[in-house]
Each structure stands twice: as C-alpha cells, then as structure tokens.
Length: 68
Image 1 (spheres, rainbow, N blue to C red):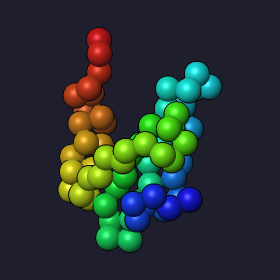
Image 2: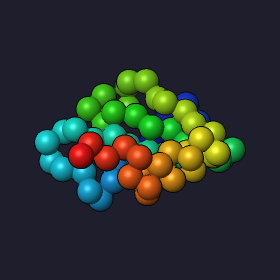
Image 3: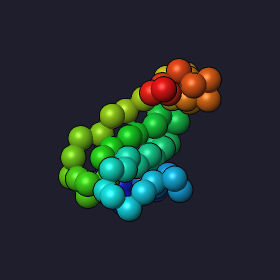
C-alpha cells in the first residue's frame, strides 16, 4: 500500500501483539516514512531525509534513547 509516496510499509520483527507498533517505509527519493500501525494507513506520516534517518538509527545503536 502506498501512502504519501512511501511504499512497502512494514513493522519491526520485534513488534509485540499489543498494538503498540510503528511501521516504516521508503520512498523513491530515499526518504523514510514512519506511521502508527493502529491508524491502518489513515493517520499522519512522519517523513525523514536519509541523513535524518541514519542519525536516528545511529542514536538507537548507541543507546541514546534507552530508558534505563
């Protein structure tokens, strides 16, 4: 399903079954879309440039967002 130019929405394999999931898709220009799976494709999409997405992934890898 396409939404705002993003194709191939998918959830993380680490998503649980409790409905608290996000989905990610990529556009032809390399931008990355993130949306709430509970909206079933009808909610807003956060769009990131490739550089922004890589910075976010780097922060995740480095533990920047760990709660503990």
